[in-house]
Length: 212
Image (cartoon, rainbow, N blue to C red; front, side):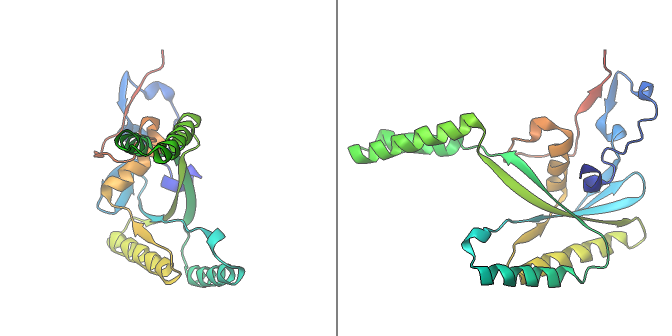
């Protein structure tokens, strides 16, 4: 799946591990040449665009509504004449803020019934936090093309068309910008960023050190 995410974010060109020096920047190690605007440029001459697709709960739909959604989505995507990849990532959710809010409410109320209910909720969410069960699944679509004079324009047009297709089916989606693409890359290339919900992402990757 990952090779389709960035086509070579991990290019598989590790022909000589001895080439790695004591400190090698990940930019030199990976297949990413640049990230500008809504486009990722690879060293092997491709441009990529990424679309985040918001999930919907099909459990809330009737059987007829499910069939209608399937038919509409199939009809919209059937007109695509170029390849794309669809994948999802599970990442933990930080619920410490919610727990702190419940604890503040618990300390500020004098109602014993409210205290009992809040105490149960606090225990429940603390259990979720400790067990690692609080995760959210994020869905992405990847499109790409060969680098050319009008490649960025054509790729951006395709991305906008996909967003419109999802909108026609009642599904919300958005094209990732520069910082969002860097954040997505970090989910794969920098595990320490996987749990971060909101951060000021800079266009930099971690350093790789030579194994002792």
